[in-house]
Length: 247
Image (cartoon, rainbow, N blue to C red; front, top):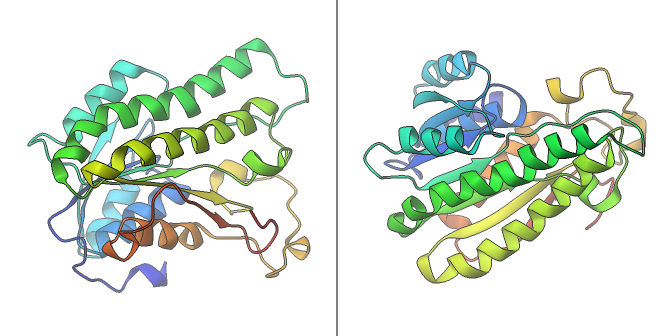
């Protein structure tokens, strides 16, 4: 995490809610935003204690909320807890689930993944929207996937369909958020070494840059999209895949 040790104040005074912050891309993003001065609220169904501890070791400010992305009441409560004073400037929606499965998924797998990844992200965005509008400079970054474009990659159709749906969600909210100063974008990671994909047979030799991605490789582009440097970027999908796919 050496890239995240350098601090700046570009997000000083801002409040960021990062879902899926207990591990992987969400955890790395929480550290990246904190390193830039934001107060980061780490949200996850699992304890984000380790992320919060690292964040504070780096001199950052943060807090933790527990939530279940598939439970809309839980999502609404988490957003309320994240913005107790009404302030929320940044939402990074990195939480999600997926199953390694066959072409023909069960109804239960389909419903669970769609309800969590797509409907849960919508519920989070909907609950956060009034706070982002009040900010006047709201930023939303949704983590989708290269699988939304190419399919496959060891996960079932429900996973890739949910990630494709997120792109439509991002573009809809980008269109309607512009007049309120809200920028809404997505990142589409490729093969990233996280607990989510542990044990899956990814071949680094097949990636043009010659290695698997690391969570920091995605967190830094997310931090850029949350910054003033990206103030004219909205509705975009930034591909972070080492050259495997050009969107």
